[in-house]
Image (cartoon, rainbow, N blue to C red; front, side, top):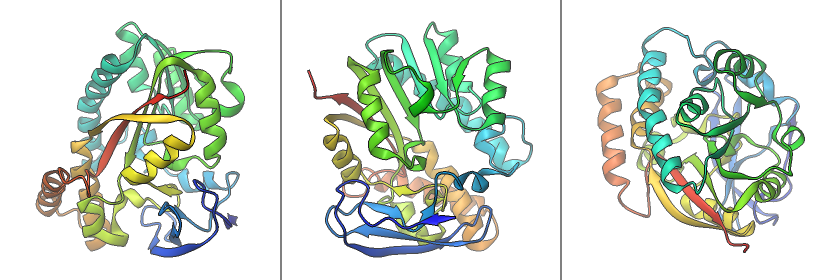
Length: 297
């Protein structure tokens, strides 16, 4: 079941232009449309699956971000990349967090939280997938809630809240930011990682760009539109950090969607080119990490 948005999720104004039409190359082969707000330029899937019906688009063993033990070349490469990104993410949290209470929204099977836990952090997770949540709880003995808005005690305060490629999935955007503001310590840091739909690889692959991930991704951020959303909820962006490994992985999937073959050499070339061109602030990298701090004293 789909729903049609009458107004932009960020600026709440009506008026949009069709930006791109693409398929769910990963699972359903259904066609979806991305529109761009004619006022603020924000790109979003419209119509989109309702929050209640969206779960069917995740119900596959091939959704490897929630499968810690899947075999094959792509999951293996994903696992290698995750090994390095876990350590990179931790270094970012350690550098910017003023303390050691951490909430990770969309924690999946819990590898990142477990790594932070072994480094002395007091960790809590949120994960809607029953399978992934159960794995995190049983394997790593983590505290993991199923729903952010209803299950996380809003009287708690966290030094750091992370959303690693999660915000683009969340239907209730404003409600989520309101609660994030309540949960974050006044000196705390909000860390948000997102695909960048202005990047070179997004422009190169067009509708085949894997990070559109229709219809699981219902928002398609750029640097400017993420900053607009942050400002709306009284957050300032103090730093943007590129996720350079993502360009190679996304290019590999995009090649497969476009040609039917992973084309590792071409994927590596376009991933490398995307990282090189990502130095241009008008483009940016394939994925970006935003360090946000509250402007409310």
